[in-house]
Image (cartoon, rainbow, N blue to C red; front, side):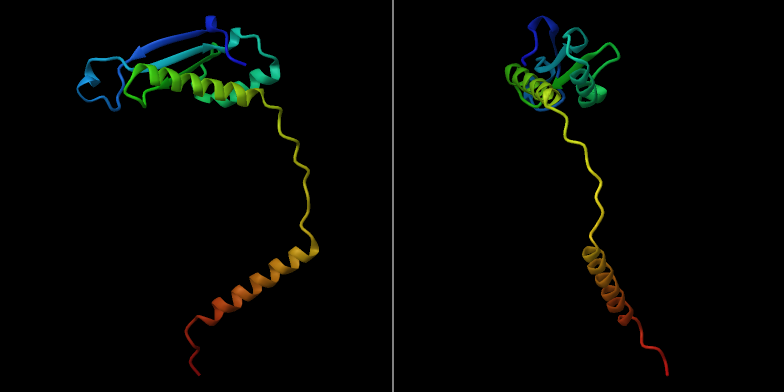
Length: 132
């Protein structure tokens, strides 16, 4: 399930987060690009991956993941790869079973209406007393 290394590209850029004195000097943030369109996934997995990636996938089928939480380049690389692997793992899972619509039982409907009536009565009794 790990992606082909030939389909991965890494770019490093300056992170906006923590870094202290190094924040304006070092490029610790990583932008991981995975060319998913060239990976040859089956249609079901490809559609699921496109849905999971959302705005992180370009029109060309490239998934872009940016990681800049950590102060070091290595930790950000690990974070980006972990996120990509989690996304691919989720895409490979089988689809959930279809939902079968059900109707509430008569007893549950009765209990619901009784509780609504009781609550309405309680609220009605809170009002100001009517002048006699």
